[in-house]
Amino acid sequence: DPKIIQKPKYLVAVTGSEKILICEQYLGHNAMYWYRQSAKKPLEFMFSYSYQKLMDNQTASSRFQPQSSKKNHLDLQITALKPDDSATYFCASSQVGYQDTQYFGPGTRLLVL
Amino acid sequence: GDSVTQTEGLVTLTKGLPVMLNCTYQTTYSPFLFWYVQHLNEAPKLLLKSSTDNKRTEHQGFYATLHKSSSSFHLQKSSVQLSDSALYFCALIYGNEKITFGAGTKLTIKP
Image (cartoon, rainbow over all chains, first blue to last red; front, side, top):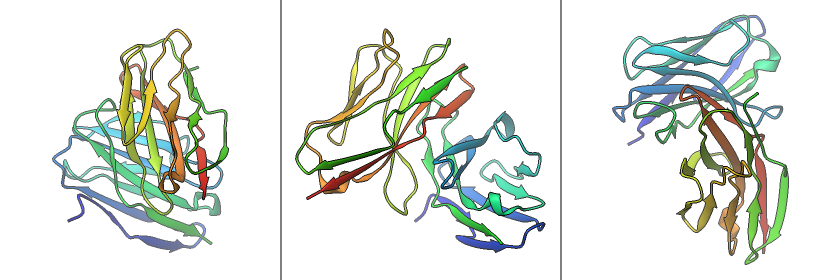
């Protein structure tokens, strides 16, 4: 059974629209993360949450907003989508923080037209 | 600022040869280094990690030693296999609450 679920697997969006990427982990972890991977930047850290609190935000744009409704959920809302947002978005989790092993979800591949 | 540098973007080797992928870092904090591997169409997975100076850490035939004197954490393997073809990322944790990744090295192994 998958321990980290990301939905949807593929997503096509129109420029200017808004989408929410879903991430749920069933590893009992307390820290969750979002990463982005594209041709321009192989692996880019975006956010980290620990115990449902924002720990680190390395995303310059406020169009990206993480949402943690439950301890094991960390969704990513993206507003005013641009073609440059096209990428694979990975969710990850670890026991408590960065120094623990991070386990990555399968990713959501976003294409913005 | 705090950063990680992976000097090789692409490395192509013949099966059975040794490999070393370079990773150097810059930080004023006590460093914690990771190597992640990502196979084609898969998610990244942890390969190695270390925060102990001059101690070799090994996993799945790969090994690395953190050398604080030279700010390095190079990834090595004595004999690469076709299945080692993947993207390898070096990552630095600094200040306990910050993480940064290198640009990645794509390793391609030929028969």
